Length: 96
View 1 (cartoon, helix red, strand yellow):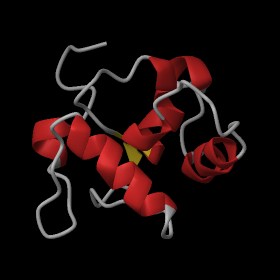
View 2: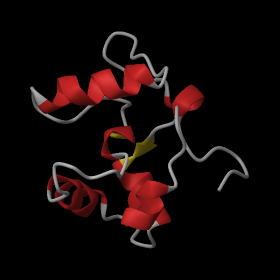
View 3: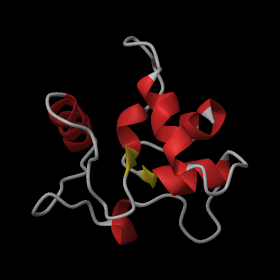
View 4: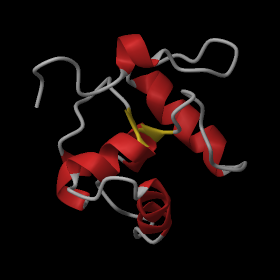
C-alpha cells in the first residue's frame, strides 16, 4: 500500500478505495485509513493526498487543517469543503 501511495503525483489526490485497489486490495478502503493512521509522524509519504470518495477530507481537526494546508500548497483548493475528483483525482484514463 505504501508503494502505491508513494506514486500519487504532486497536485493530485486519490481516494481511500482507489488506493486500496491500486495496492491490490479492492474493497479495503478502511484498511487504507488504518494504515495511514499508523504512519510515523515524520513520514515522507504523501498521506495528505488521500481523501474520501466524496472528495472530502475525512480526518478530524487539527489533522484536517494540516491536510488542507498541504493540499493547498500543491494547488489543490477545495470548493465548499470538496475537492473536485474529476480535476484532481488520480489516476485518470491511462495514467499510472
